[in-house]
Image (cartoon, helix red, strand yellow):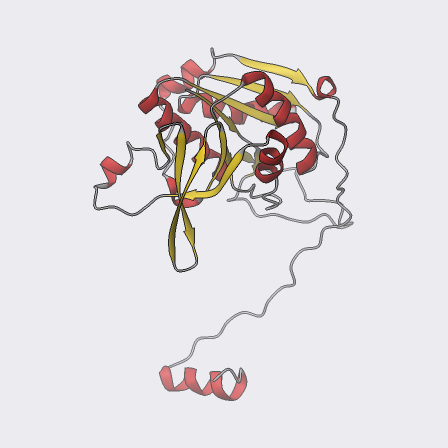
Length: 262
């Protein structure tokens, strides 16, 4: 079974983001970068599926030269090889999906896994556009059904089930859980509660240095800068600090007389 997983280089979610004075973007001088957390979950799920069904996990990233760090991080977790499409930036979801569609056409995976969204732009569009371009079924926001198993047992099992040429996916919806089944090949986007990604071991980090990462220029895909462009960024308006109240009676009084919500 071949699984293809996309990873994106994003600003470290733990860093404080500052918008440039002219609104053209964010300050990057002291910025740290990491693998998109939703993509990290997709990598973990692919590794569990590979271990259960045998096969190969291929990591793909479209981005700047330094994005190879995130590919190596996925390889250190246990993925088999990587593909890096070198792009200086400025690609919108349509452009990225176009590149990925061509890679999928060459690699012919049984399953493509993506994080449901990237935490830098929160667009959440690449998965849907890619599925449409491929003409594949898509299951979005894959989660995991609660069970009585121990955390150790859960950590070994994939949340996505492959059976009879179909992928079964549990999704969180209003009021409960929904189970979908899509025929393979298929595309699945992953949500937060699907699994807990493993930490890369020291042997895994050492092995990752020797694993293949194929570099491809963006020009070879016939794709140029995206049609969607950043016009301006603005920081959110500062909010007043909260206040402490002495007791419940004081809280009710403020909610009633000041906030007028009760």
